[in-house]
Length: 244
Figure 1 (tube, one colour):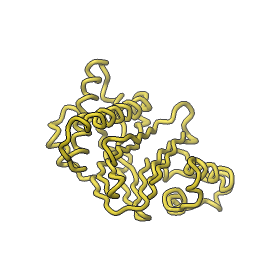
Figure 2 (tube, rainbow, N blue to C red; figure 1 turned 135 degrees about the vertical axis):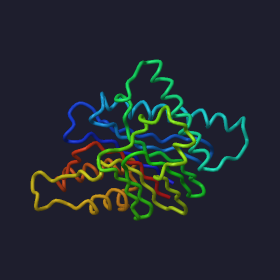
Figure 3 (cartoon, rainbow, N blue to C red; figure 1 turned 90 degrees about the vertical axis):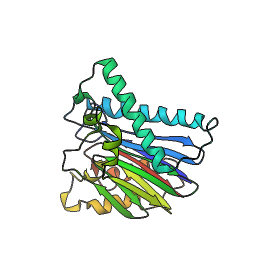
Figure 4 (cartoon, one colour; figure 1 turned 120 degrees about the horizontal axis):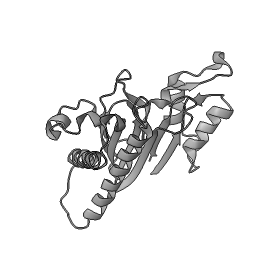
């Protein structure tokens, strides 16, 4: 099992990459993975994606240490729900402590727990994003008006979570990827007649296996798109790809 990651600032962004990603061991044979995309119209949008990501990563680290003390087996669905519950609780606490406004806490969140040994995964998608399982795409698109997590910090958690419709269960995967919607924004500014389609870009990054022997597999592909295909990503992009 190999895990590849790439994080890229978009051509239209000048100061910060507003996307973020995490990949952290949560228990034996299980990884917590997530990609996040800060809202460009929000205040200092990079802050929200990094804040949520670092809190989620810290939750996974704590869960990993707790595994040695608490031996109860918890299914992926319940485990993911508890991670998101804790995430919202901790974000709400920090919001109050720092006097943050809702506009400072707007980020999409595609988060999941992957059982590496059993090739299973559970995902929650808050906002936009793309999941690819063995060449099959699951696109989540909310017409540029994502229902950000930051809007729901004071909601009843169980009611809010149980009403979320963007959930996905994955089983028996050999090649699994998650990414932000920046994957749809590659452009060829030098020769528009040679513009690659979205499907061609997605297949090259999330399906094609040439170069998996390199640890920087995805970064190499991004460079090839830039230097050989003259395609640059115009929005920020975060990808995590797991290949068995």
